[in-house]
Image (cartoon, rainbow, N blue to C red; front, top):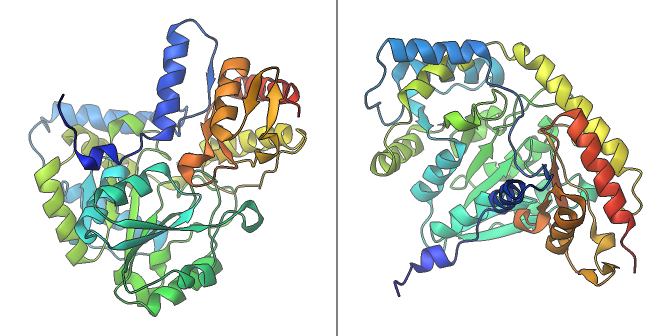
Length: 398
């Protein structure tokens, strides 16, 4: 028997990918499964981006790429940071990676030693914890409930900082909650960071353009902490380029160089053709995304209208991304015949079996009382899924 590494054995499988895999298996068996488990836009990549990729192929951009990305792409990302966020990251402080997930892993592996503490607000994206554990770090979780719109405040943040704290990771707009930090809320977090100049903050802004009200606010906008912040973004969500695999960071030169070194030993540079396509995305005015964002907004309201009619389901009103994260704990301890629902995992499996809907248990996001619903699906499918959800929950009783 081959003995696998302790590192691997300590790692949890991604909850979102596990449910997506299970729903695919059931579909292959002929089951009519509606999967609302993955965070993937149901839009096609815009044609002008695909056209740029075709041009890249015709121009023979088919060889190894610089580890940190083509210079012209990093210059466009630099321009995007200034245009959209007011952030001055010259190209030397930008590293392009194979998805924002790799960008985050690069930062964590560059900064964290065994025993270092990493503060992560919950609910959090499923991979944050596992990436920190892989680096030998200790996740320090701050819980923010639905009564706080799933957002921590400055007092909670400061209360858990110790001499071992090295990194703070959060997202806004947030996966899984869709909650968005305002400029004033970020100002409070920045005031804490000012007091701890050795503490780095990783601001995951991959859902930046999918926002239903107000302007997007970046943590790095506060000049006194600019060099403490690593801003992570990418093309997967807003530009419907999940399969293209491209993320990027803006960071201090020291951290950017460190990530470049790490990446050089793992994957080197990301796909040449993806990078040519991403230049078109960076050059585009974000206003071209208006129709997509309006569609997501309409879908949010549609799904909320169903959830708000289901007894004992509590839900906030998220202002970004494309997720709802209802608290369904009132159904724990209920039954349908001999089927006992003890927790969110039981509930998701029950909904998969009895309702043919694939949702994700909130435990993997650090919020076991909740489940995540992705509304990146057509209105027709969402209506059918919500009708199934309503009927399945109605069959549960104590």
